[in-house]
Image (cartoon, one colour):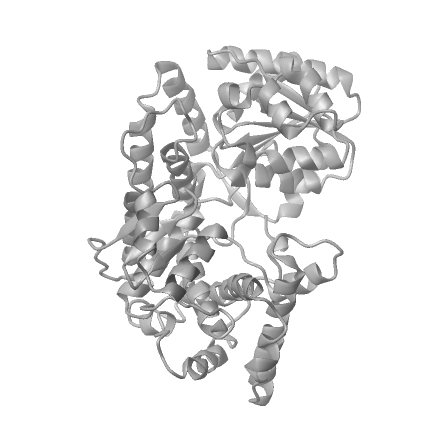
Length: 527
């Protein structure tokens, strides 16, 4: 992958995705257009410096009020906000655009446990007044609830953007008065945090307050950094003493997620006559193929969603074991491609799910993935490799994606609570990884049957995703550093899963892979 060509490929993909999303939402109003232009002009003129995240947190120690940008349809925005506030060890309160000041009694009742989530969403009219997926914001409210952090709604609901900024600043003045000595963290749409917008109004109402602004992956800035080929090493950017940015999400991912959100039908105000998930997957296939220097025909690709009954009709005609495996994946909410009948299934309208189907289709077209893996226990190594290929493709589309490391697995196993992957999958991942290291150091392989007997099938599926991510991360590093090149070395990645002695091919390649540097010690070291 030539870096200059890759920049252009991604820019073209971004333009295509954004244009398609804007064709659904319609033309911007003149008010919004001028508002956006001021935001983009300011960002285009600001100089940028890549810095260590500790510099940002040093700045936040002094600030009284911190505004963090939000891209409403993107879950990563709230994750970025959470990553920041979790590290702040002084009293703080949250002020959120997604709720209005009139919602305050309901917010307090919910945080105190007096209202169920369902009743809370109903009383604040979440779908009607905000509309963006509650799932994106739930972790933020749960964190506030668990840590007894006050949350305030600061959206006035005004149609005029300028008036909305002014009213929100008035509400923030009131919040400041109610919480002397506490830092105020504001989550507000990224366009609102240009100097002439919400920050200007806040400073007029609270002139003595030390205000700091953090953009979240603004497009203009990301492309500037990408053109210097520094996007992988740049997570935190200093624009000025009071203006910073997190550079953690590529623009095309932001807009692809927004497009998928629109096409999912979640927003009932958007009328979509015909939505074909094949289009979304095909576009990602084309992006991946161009990035790898491959010629991949998408004419035979068909992708179905959970709402399409014809998918289940096709699955019902499959042989028993294949049908069983497909339905298990459906039940587990997994997106996948069935090579035997050349169709894909999209469990969710999200970038990761779309990329998963696209990656497996490309693997199929490269003649490496021609049969569904029916038994994750028996073919564990094949599952790991399939997940590695899938992960590498996801990194090509989203270079800022992070995976677990061996250290992360060890750390997770030392905690009392585990995430939804569960302790068994983590134990299996660690066992397999230690077995691989033993092989590399002693050229002696622990019999796979010793591992197989201990764990259930679902743990193998989840573990393969974890281990495939670790393996895929190293592959992506090698590709990015030109240690291996595409399409010349494509068979190294798109290995034939039909090989009778696949284990030999796996461990033979593993010796090479483990000689490559580790990209990072832990994903938690990164923003």
